[in-house]
Picture (cartoon, chains in turn red, orange):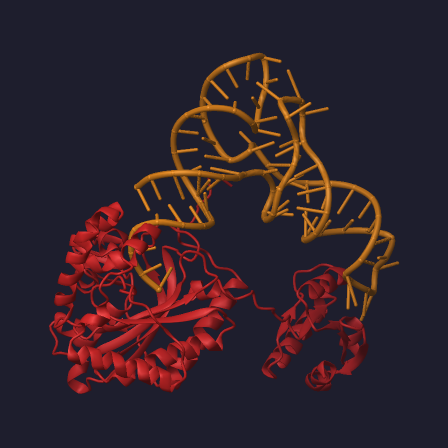
Amino acid sequence: MDNRFQSIRGFNDIFFPESYKLQSIEDTAVRYFNLYNFREIRTPLLEKTDLFVRSIGTSTDIVEKEMYTFEDSGGESLSLRPEGTASAVRAYLEHSIDKQDPVQKWFYRGPMFRHERPQKGRFRQFYQAGCESLGIADPFIDVEIIKLADTIINALPVKGITIRINSIGCPECRPGYIKVLKSFLGTIKESLCDDCKRRIDTNPLRVLDCKKQSCIAATADAPKTTDYLCGDCSSHFNTVKTGLDGLRLSFLIDPRLVRGLDYYSRTVFEFTAEDAGAQNAVLAGGRYDYLVELFGGTHTPAIGFAMGIERIAGLIDTPSTQGPDVFIIPLTEESKQKALAVALLLRQAGRTCETGFGEKTLKSMMRRADKLQSFSVAIIGNDELKEGYVTLKRLSDGHQEKIKDADIVNAVQNIKA
RNA sequence: GUGGGUGUAGCUCAAUGGUGGAGCAUUGGACUGUGGCUCCAAGGGCUGAGGGUUCAAAUCCCUUCACCCACCCCA
């Protein structure tokens, strides 16, 4: 056991029923993405490292220490994607989609990779489903996107979700705010933790995000981004808020919400769960109005979000599952061919079927049928073979009858009713 | 990368430094073509790995690995 291969840390095998839970979360998300007319885009898991460095930001933790980066045989630096937006924007420009129709609504789902220490709700390979709306600056798009996120979350059996929103301004107004914030932080520097002291210079916004009680207390009176927004950003944010109010969507304005990626601007939002451990952000996103031009395109406003599939799964009970409609029991070697024919017939009619091939005795097959929570069993032995019927038995009450071969599909229908 | 916790059967867990057990699960039988319930039995372990102390180590010490939780940060 000790010498056998082991998966690498933070890369997990996911078995049924956990896999089924993840699948149903993704399916729910995809259903609503489609309902909102988003179209799927599939991008590579591997990209040139620089794509992520330039979009996410050099001083972010993701780029500094969390990317799976290596050189391929040609000496080029490649990285497993730590998030989905950079690839989408790259594809948008690479295929000149902005020239055909700058307005695009895309969704994606799949694994992301970050080299962090695993803990509750955090893995090195994890799954996200997300969407991107490109080309529209209208704040009502923000409202619509947040409503989409809310709709997906509400379609799932999760409780205790809080929607937090904030605006972090634009290149017009943010520098001014950061200046004010920096000088404020300078005055309280001594009461901040060591990390935050360092952040004053490297990334002052992040000081507001510190979870240490002492830092939270020290920054209680810190200037708020929303008080320093320029006219355009301010009215954009106001429209978002009234739009959400108009949908009767309750949300919290969280001045400490700054997001960890450099490309965000204006509206940022996060859905947090009460019961999720320390990693409580289950869905997050925001505007990134300047990323397309940062990549060399024309100015293209955009907004998107991503949801953490496993984090949401952590809030959901394991779903109860159903066994097959019919478990087919061939008693003899000669009856196996007919067993297969019956199974195929039932499956064509949409009935889930399991076959008892490989089991030795009737008892062992019955036990297996029971263990799989089969609704019924169809026994096929030499008698049945000779006289052209199957013995159909309902396991819940033991009711059993002989069914002529031609009537099997109907009989299964009737026995379930 | 840092800190704390935990490693014993497939799973959940017992075992004062003195021959490693139980429940559940698995397989078979009681019951020859009828599951669940019950009873009986069987299989399954280098106690995560390596070293040390000791007459004697699952137990004490050191090292290492893995997992969990938290920090940093993030979905």
